[in-house]
Length: 238
Image 1 (cartoon, one colour):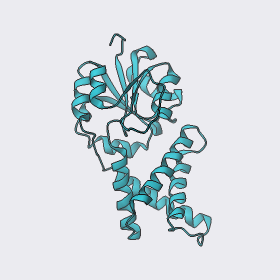
Image 2 (cartoon, rainbow, N blue to C red):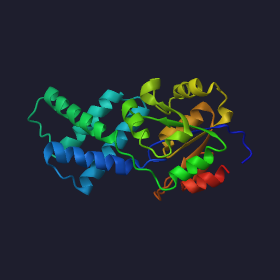
Image 3 (tube, helix red, strand yellow):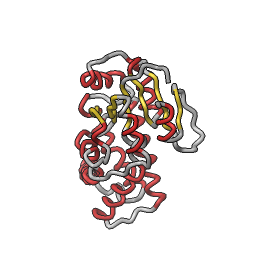
């Protein structure tokens, strides 16, 4: 690769860590302990879809982070019948806020690394300076990062909660440049699984991008490069 990349900005969830397994474990444990409810696969998929849509609304600045945390569980618990309209609105909000807090506390301690993530990141760290970029809650993401077996290869992490905006907002880049002291987008390569968050962020700041597209879902993306595995990413950047 001939480009003069010095920094790799790598997304955390669903790029290096398995977000779906993390989400499933935290969700099922929360509902089993709080409501003695064993969620079905279909119910978990319902939550996945609701949560994903809420994050897209957040990326488009149509809702705030506190609203997201309420909205996803309010809609989900109504959908599966745990909220049936008999409670008043304030009571429903209080219930889902408690559920969300429990869910996030569980999530902060769950780390599911993708196969090859450790070896690939250690290999890339020999050639590039690597920083994590993530939309998420600061204490949850830092808690999870502490459990990552290869956390030592990262020179820093930029979290949306701490910089005050979410990818793909180009203002997120300020959190990166405060760590690196370099504001030249040509020196950065943005790597992630999300077209609407990671790839859109890279394009917004004028940096090249790598779409890590590991699912055979038929989606097409406009990234500088597309890889279908972390090993392919390693080969691309060799």
